[in-house]
Image 1 (cartoon, rainbow, N blue to C red):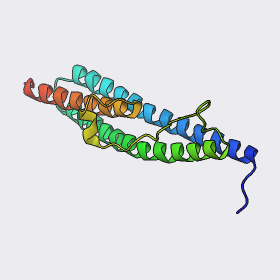
Image 2 (image 1 turned 120 degrees about the horizontal axis):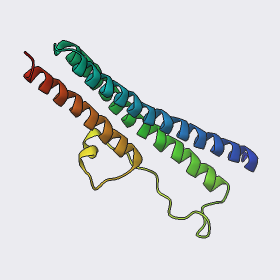
Image 3 (image 1 turned 135 degrees about the vertical axis):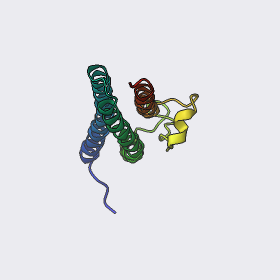
Length: 150
């Protein structure tokens, strides 16, 4: 089997890094959408006496946060694939030596329940925890709004 040229490997590795950063940016944007909806939910709750608009906004917020949770979990799988590709490119370029890159490990998969294990830390787990916190805020806000309705 013929080996690819080093420049082709570098281009492939560069593209994998770009893909990784693009996916990471998308994941952060899901938090921004959640936060905008949470602010809207509170604004609607303050503006109207009836709890119905706040409940509708809260349901939308929780659904959006659940989608964000799913996106975050899926993006972890993409991250693992991209880092596997990057590490293979590094290996092909001969970069895995004690003086350059040594003992690099792939990120491991995680589940929704890993968000409750606060001793585990990484960016995607933080984002997952934020989605959960925002969803819980929506549930608590709507519950309080219903409880205090005339």
